[in-house]
Amino acid sequence: MTTSTTRTSRTARTLATTAAVAALVLAACSTPDDGGAPAVADDAPSGPALELTDAWVKSADEGMTAAFGTLANTGGADVTVVAVTSPAATAMELHETVEKDGVMVMQEVESFDVPAGGSVELEPGGNHLMFMGLTAPIAPGDEIELVLELTDGSTVELLAPAKDFAGANESYEGGTDMDHGDMGDMDHGDMDHGDTGADH
Image (cartoon, one colour):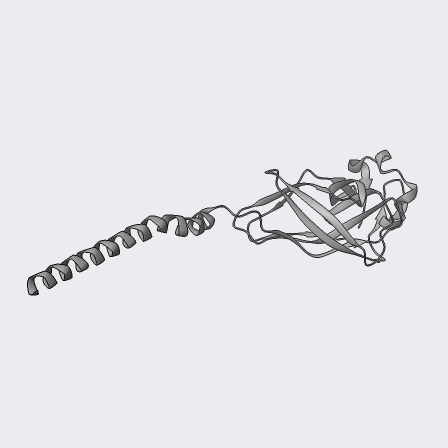
């Protein structure tokens, strides 16, 4: 009886040990699948962390208007904005305002470069996002959709509230003072950006 009992006990211990080893092997095999996803996610490059803070659009009934705010890059890589679109306008352009022959000139630029951890101000009298050919009146309180296109082809979708603003008056070289909200009588296609002065 003693010998038989001893053999049975040894067999039970052997089976238990084998089961434990098998369980460890299975657990080890499953570890890469369970822990692999977070590692890949951690190593995967993140998208551009570009925001338009303090964003706003000047309300207007028709014609042209502009969007302002601060383009803030919270990421670790430089970002270049090369285009902007909005369902609120038939066309949009990136603009800067510079002094030319004593007159503030509004002209189109190819891009806005936003350094890593830096920002670019969009403000009256400076850089701005220009709406041309409004598809509908923009009233105070409206939320205007904007889509920024970056140099790598990616896009950033934004929302900017509209508000009344008495400034952003424009002085063109032709001698006509204009307000962005009162540009409905002028076809923007008849203006040469390089020869039109603007003081936003």
